[in-house]
Length: 511
Image (cartoon, rainbow, N blue to C red; front, side, top):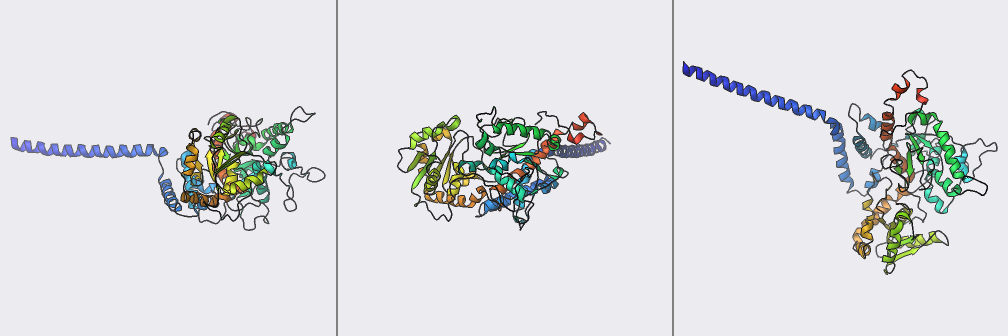
């Protein structure tokens, strides 16, 4: 009897242990699934994982392709991107990554994606009037007739900050089929601002600074300052600005000194800049704004048949040597390099044939120095690209156009300022770059040079279209900011307020 009881106890014990083990395992699996689900916003959704895998495969193949840059520079259809986020947790990182993936997945799609732009009909004094364009006799004509004569933009150094001119022309021509017979446009102008991706402010701020920043003999304030003040008043009274707090507005301020008086009040908008050298990060930063290239002023090297051996000058620099702010490196490098036999390092300007001399010098040089001056960037980088002269960038704070899709290290040499200023470091480093490596970068320069060419009408993946593509990649972030700013909007103004869409959104700094 005792043995039977002992046997029964053993059977019960085994069943209890088995039940306990099974229950523990089940609870562990349920806990693991719960943790995985709760952290899903910080991890990658399944759909996004597939997209990312597709991009990784595509990117690895593009590294072996001669046309990799052209494949990567495709305009994003933000509506398609948004649809891929449906029913998924959205974070800024996921948005940026998914845009990149969607860009790659459209490589072989020949259908151009349009960025919808609403452009204010600002009086001509803000744009083409600065080019001495008069319009009609009654002064009511806002825009030039694109089919007859387009106002000319001044040459010389004015050209380097002329992006405002090219982008405005592209918007005006977007509705005229004769300029884009094969639908080769990347933007379209819409008349209803509620349909637009961005609101474009056509103020030629760089030209205003270059021409009208000095106070006249009978003026208390310069025309440039007066125009900025008028622009701020105009924008603050527009329903579009009030609706978004300006967050969906696009403002051009490519010259570092343009918009200095208005930039604080207009800081919620997206700026198109050459760099952030004169902007505090609360006004302009890489997350919010777009960096655009300068228009090169030296002549493009057409049908370049040069070689490593035929370009006799090793390292070339011509320009202002003594600069303020971060430009001290120029004069220090001048004294370090001036006696090197295969280096051209001299003062130069646009006067007395300076542009022609720079063109000849860059076309016959292997490497061209791009050193920080008063600001981190300069037109010299884009002159070098147009000349197929491998840029040597010595500017620690520089920001580069479209760097989210373009790898500059494949056709530029980057040197930290502290290293460049060490005796013999820079010249020895440049001399260590051999013929094969230089030729590879030279070939890349010829592949990417079109990305920095401004044309009208714009052509596929030229500078105008590349800037629009950079803007399109900001659209999801712009919408995110705008939507977040509206969280407490209804609680402040009420659901039944008929004028709610025209009231200013609170200007709280919530980002």
